[in-house]
Length: 562
Image (cartoon, rainbow, N blue to C red; front, side, top):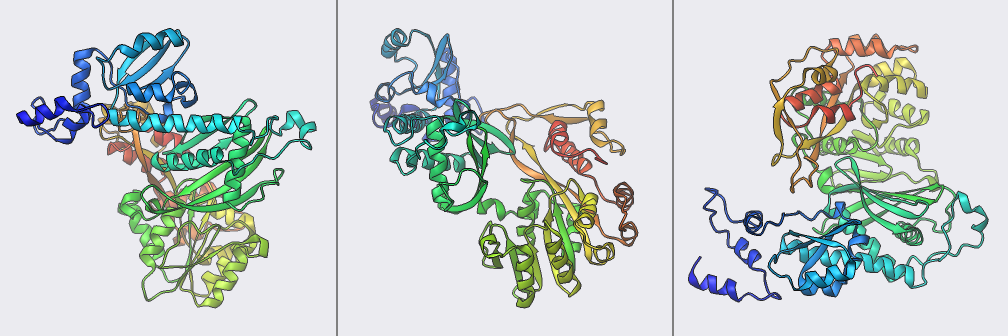
């Protein structure tokens, strides 16, 4: 750094650019770490060593925004460039990037009558989250005070007599609009796959599902929670007045990056009001390759062999949120060449793709999966994708399409691959037709992947490994990795998810087991003998490669034979 640069740093004002930000942006070499630069983390660590103040990474998911925004006014926080990040009965944790500024501390301690513990934080985060936290908290307070939200308690089982007299909240109030916009933007930033708005007795909870795990984000007053739900129902073209029965809807918006994002809406009447879940379908997620999904080696070869056939039924199974739709979209994009006609019937269309002819289920006009398949059969298709086989009529249409020379891809909600055959027979599909048309089944789950920045090697626990792979004899690695937690992964130890797979090929030996009184255990045994790799064994391989943990695989994958 030149003398001119030093003078510029010294002359930086509070309102322009923070000195730490300026130095970090210069990307100067770090003498203590050869090959590294003086980034913000290194600068904060240097400052922490000289001031004795800890460094914190501000994670909004772990902060009670309503509580910290009450510690001080927004004007006071912005003037002194500080932000409360934790509050309890004894102390308040205040983050700043200027440890030697002391003028505000005694005054604030006198007002709040609690001990203040100071910590260091990235000045860019302080500026950003100060605006976000106080804007959100202000919108909630404004919604409560404006009179646009009913002051009565929400309709719930404990207050049935008040149902007739309850006023309808004004979901178009500007405060409510701001809250909804903030929730959606925040969910996109945090890579959330689902948003849950759950009414409770005293307050409603907002939770995000990130990497398969729910995280509490905010607590809304009960009246505000009801108004937020109504606002989202309006956006999704749902019946706002109807709160007694479940409803489904959808809306489309744009992420901060500018890409279109589809949201599937679902409401559920509960004891304390309507519970709303928004499922987020990010096109970036649906466009992943097989390598990104974790499908490789022998499982990928089997899957390509099944989907490379000119006719038959290929199924993907697993619970909700296991990545079935992503797998199907990735497969269809590979199969959709100019020489073939690919048509889909979905509920809803989760991503508009130029390569496919996509049709959406519409129950209001009696357009369901079976009717859609019947219509597609008259459209000269080569490949048909059915969103889900959920009844006998759809199963029969899928079988008929496969018998007449079409390749049919679809999903089932079952625990594993062998049980999917039993499910088709339970729906009423004849065993001889299932035997003739089924090409194979792939069951899948998503496991969280360890953070590369903080994962730590440990010796393999023999008992834990045996629990994972039994009754199979899978070689135990000398060491595996465990989750630690850092700022990159928000102290979870995991970043992102990948699939583990179980691929059953309908070989002649498997076909012999497909009878009306099928034994799932015997079918599973034949499939295992022919090389099917169970979900837990697939997960064990990821553990051996240091990608995930034994606990994570045990959490998502059923025991072999369950």
